[in-house]
Amino acid sequence: MLKDNLSNVEACVQAACEKSGRKRSEVTLIAVSKTKPVDMLQEIYNENVRDFGENKVQEICEKYDRLPHDLNWHMIGHLQRNKVKHIIDKVCLIHSVDSYRLAEEINIQAKKHRLTMPILIQVNIADEQTKFGVSKDDAILLTEEVSHLENICVQGLMTIAPFVENPEDNRIYFREIKQLAVDIARKNLDNVDMAVLSMGMTGDYMVAIEEGATMVRVGTGIFGERAVSVPK
Image (cartoon, rainbow, N blue to C red; front, side):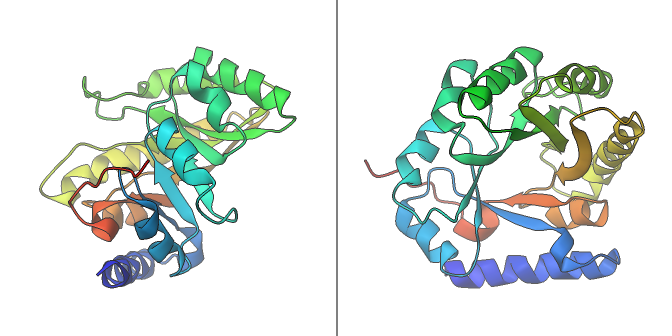
């Protein structure tokens, strides 16, 4: 079943790329594996997927040593400052930076490990009270502040668009994120490269790709609806 699900998602990604005149290589498919057991991740890994997204630090830590180490872990959920130290040497990208204090802690921990951590600024593009992320205006200010941190590299923006029945309803938000990235890139800030746009999930990733997404985060479309407890 998972193989079939992945094939369907891959076909949709390809179709969206073709529709928008883009190469398939321009879009990274992140398999969102939160709450899923290791054997399901291994099955998707065996289909040549290497990018996996998790919402919780604990799940990354529990799964990290049980799966091949050429797997790319993405931290896509809200990140507390006191947990940064647990994943700083495990993840390839932190998508959910929404405050200077969090960025500062990432910088401190990255410096301890002698690495530069790629991050994305999370933007609450629809100003939803139930979601994390900064406003468009604050995203520009935060990026400017974070650009001075030596062991961080801002690679772009991330957003979680509203839950909608019609994916077209989110097109306007994806366009706003794309334009925001262009506006920030024009500032030519040190340690800032707006090449990555992490936007689009199971319900709207095709529209997101058409509007410039370079990473899409697909969980239900690959793993199905049912949540499974992570084995201890």
